[in-house]
Amino acid sequence: MIEGKRQKQVAAVLEKELNEIFQRLGLSMINGGMVSISGVKITPDLFEARIYLSFFKVAEPEGALKIIQERSWEIKKELTTRVRHQLRSMPQLSFYIDDTLEYVDKMEKLFKEIKQEDEKLKHKP
Image 1 (cartoon, rainbow, N blue to C red):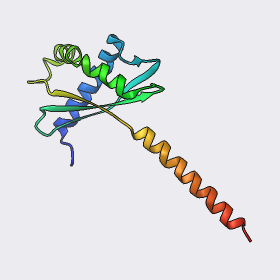
Image 2 (cartoon, rainbow, N blue to C red; image 1 turned 90 degrees about the horizontal axis):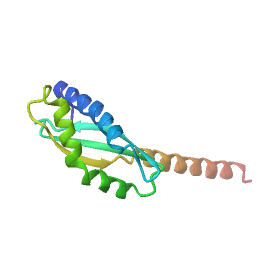
Image 3 (tube, rainbow, N blue to C red; image 1 turned 90 degrees about the vertical axis):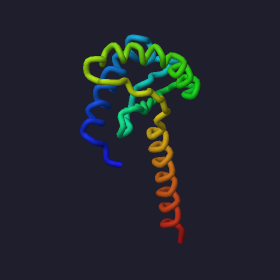
Image 4 (cartoon, rainbow, N blue to C red; image 1 turned 180 degrees about the vertical axis):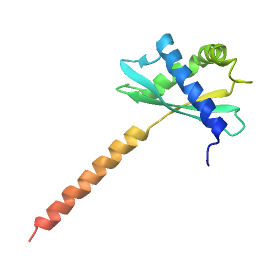
């Protein structure tokens, strides 16, 4: 699905403000690891914002996500205050784990294994 211009604008505003809010509330460092917002997607009706979080060296990403979800009312309250002059209504916030880095790492390992197997097959008489 192609994102519209307004969706992209709203997503950019929310991502910028959420990054600052996470810093201020101390949510960018959880359980000894780093949490960052890897992306924000807005539904076409602008009623829901899907916030994708990337966890770096966090022992339990699910636990960290739960901490963030428990504080979502606080995040939304501050976000609403910051963007009240830019948006008519505040979208519903949903937080998700962005596992693309894990997926990329897994795929790289698989390709490496395939390459090693290829090399073994080439050198066999």
